[in-house]
Length: 243
Length: 243
Image (cartoon, rainbow over all chains, first blue to last red; front, side, top):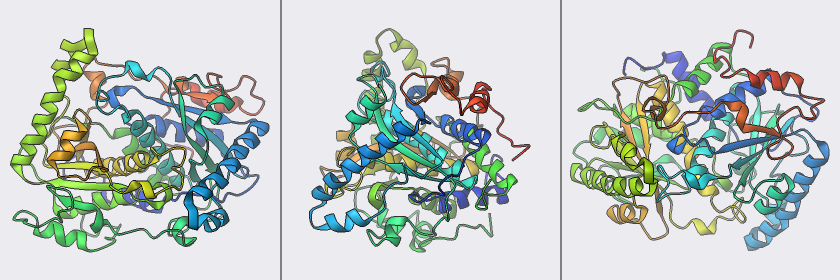
């Protein structure tokens, strides 16, 4: 612990919101999000880190119902194409609920800004760091929304050029997310794609290596015996009895 | 507010960690991160959303000091190249401290996994959603670290192919971050690049539009008068007196 650590109850809240955030597709129809809550959520997004402080995120709030339907139609057009690309799992995919665009209280399209080429800091060899920054902003929004009791879903089933055209984006901007936001009937305790039988999340221990690709921690590990033991418990407790 | 909302103090902790997280380059040399804290942080990262539940993140912990020095050397090689690409701001850039690789208590390289092509769900038209997912995981880690009083910096000044080679990554894996993590002397109240005079963060109101690109909220806005007013306060208070 350092002098800058948050209190144990505060840390517990932060770990809890991280654990209880879900990618939502089911929303309470006809519900609303208070304007001051929306402002807090967007401010949380805007507090994200960005490469070279370029702040490449742009948020377009969709309040026009006809536009919302056109965005939904774009996703409906993409679903059979994704199904076809999935081959043997096509029918299974088409049965999944993958978005809540028409039901959610608030709909946003998030895009990478235009004129990003002038930003070179941290992007000369990794130009895609603009997307990384916007993704951090969306994760902030997701966590803040969960803390307010609101669900959010990130939909990426769309043709980006057609969505860009629908929103009059300049040629060098890029839509990367349709965000469905609002009250939800419930927050499941596992990812929707697990509950729907699409995929099974794998434990953390499969994702951590040491010093080189595919090398498990602790081989050789003169400095890490407790580290390995801590990771072998999956999942570790979210609450912290000894902070 | 919905029945799933966190308590007011818990929400305040979550908004506070989002506001107080910083991209850090200065660390306390010779410090350590307890193994159980590291395990919590990585579990927080692993709780991130991922497109199609593909969990594309891989974390390589660097405990070998010679390897750490080689990673630092890669960044040192990139700095003059970025400076050159920046043209008139080259000298200014070279004066900035942009990483804390040799001083930080813990060093990680984060990569996109190999064999990502089999994952089509949500990626047929937007294959870069794998990077979006890993970025969400890194943001989780960043916030969790801040709550523990630990700083983190995301370094993207490196040649990804050479870093991949250094860590024996397969050809279809991609390193996207060098993460410096550990105790820090202090958390500044503004982004380092602002304090160093490199850039000035712009207010949220410049990043929000309604129904189409570049259209400010509320024009026309029969549904949004309070929304506009809420956004015109910049920055809004993090604490919530009336949650």
